[in-house]
Image (tube, rainbow, N blue to C red; front, top):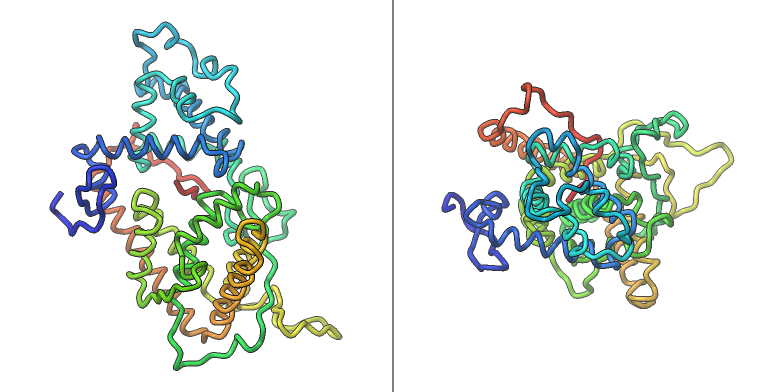
Length: 398
């Protein structure tokens, strides 16, 4: 587009591009559609990263594409040269084994126009039609919201019919020697920020909360480990000496490692909001233990001001510690020590610095949202009747 500096390169044609909007442009549609087709094929067909529940979600979206309301809007028309195109999608999917169905088998059941519209929605998830599909209440019921978004009320008082929240992970123990602040040592706060972005992304992307929950399939837990290792290699790589020095550095690195096609400005704004919420120390807590009880030297009370931040590392520690068959005992211990070291640095950091990081990520999140609203205001097409659609209660990342 020649409007901004080209920071990325298309893996298909090797042409540099500046942003996700540039990648999805009409002039680049041939490459971008090929990319999304490959992503769908690998994502749906690989048993190692997709469970039956994920396949059900995809089929749910496909069924919505065949809904009568969408037909009334003229988005789909089952008119073609094929004799079976006038059949409903449900009939065309009849007899299909969801557990073993490949991406090609799913796509073959769609009409040409449905396939074209499906890939169009993937290229532009911010469109009105895509948002209508993603805001379905049926899909929301299947998603699990992050544990840190759960209201601070008794579980019995939650409306579990509309939103399912994950439970808070138990707190890990951190040796007292790691909780000593040394102002002369390099600050790891932006590395911690990077870890929190990766953790929030994986939690929302896989709809797993917490990541180490026994209810999650072993395929999903393995995928969570893979994504975290790719996003924050300084946690899993013994030789890594990466040190982030600014929030811009953290955001740029996240975009590069997780892919510009997976994280747009709206997604990044959500993740930065998560970081701000998790890293900020709570102001009002229950600080005292019951009379006669003595807390273990390494343990923290669940109402500690930094309990939620510590839970991020606790969940990651449990997630990687269970992986003994693939990584081996030696690597597992190393990962646990690395995660515990970062947890100790977090607990030792003065509250003023944590509040400053929370403020910085919150302001950057707001700035990204404001910029996106300005762009949408200039380019958006009004919805029918001029009414705005209500956003989904749960932010499920692509």
